[in-house]
Image 1 (cartoon, rainbow, N blue to C red):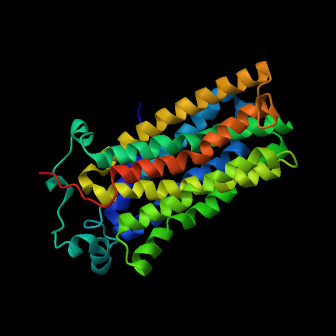
Image 2: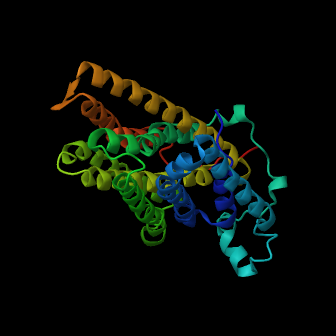
Image 3: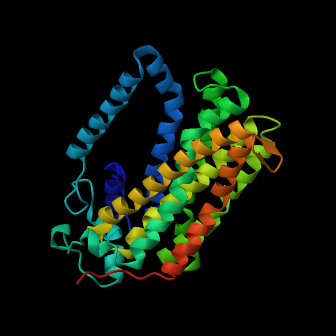
Length: 335
C-alpha cells in the first residue's frame, strides 16, 4: 500500500531543479539507478544469502539505505537556498515560471492538496492508469527473469551463466533507458511542442518497445541469449516510458503536490505488480500441472508466453487511456 520514499522525493527534486523540458532526461538518469541495482543484485545477493543466510542479506542491503538517507539529509537544499546554484542557473531552473509571468514562491507559501481532492482530477487518474498498466510489466521481468532462465534453460541465479544473463539484460536496460528521457527535450526544442505534447509522443514511441516481448519465447528456442536481449530492450522501453510518465506530473500539477501524486500513482503500480506476479505464479503452476498449450508451447513455457503477450500491449492500452483522460496539457491551479 505504500511507496518507498525515494521516488516521490526524487520526482519532487527533479521538479525543483529542472525546467519542464529537461525533467524527463533528469528522471531517466536517476531512474537508471534502479537498473544499476538490478545489475549488482544477481552478482551479490545470492552470494550474501549463501554466506550469511537470507535474513542477513536483507539487513546488509537495508543498511545501505540509511547511509544514502544520511548523505541526502546533509547535502540537499532547494535551488534558491543552495550555495552551489548561481543566479544564472536559478533563472534557468525557473524559466517555466518566468514564461508564464508567475513569481517564484517558496513551497511553504504554496497551497497543499489533500488525498481526497487529488482523486477529483482527471490528471491524477491519468497518472494512476499509466502506472497501473505498466509497472507490473517491469516488476514481472525483474522478479521472474531469474526463474525464467532457471526453468527454461537450467541456469540458476547463482550460476555463472545465470549471473551473466541477468547482468547483460540490465546492462542493456541501464544504457538505453537514459536516452529515452532526452527525446521529449528534442521535441520541445526542435519541434516547438509544449512539454506534455513532447512527453506523450515520446511515450507513444516507447509503448511499442514491449511488443518485442512477443518474440522472446519463440526466439528462446535457439538460445537463452535471445530472450535476454529482447527482455533487455523491453525493460529499456519501460524505463524510458517511466521517466516520461513521472515527468507528466510536473506538467499538470503544482510543485507542492508532486510527491503526493507520485505516491498515489506508485501505489497503483505496486498493486498491479502484486496482481501480475501473483497471477503469473498461479498460471505457471496451472500450466505445468495441466500441460496447457498456447501457440505451440506446452506447460510452463506456454504460461510464460501468455504473460509475455499481456506485457506486450499493456503500454499501448495505458497510453490510450491517458490520452483519453488528458488529451492536452492542462495545469491544475489550486484555489
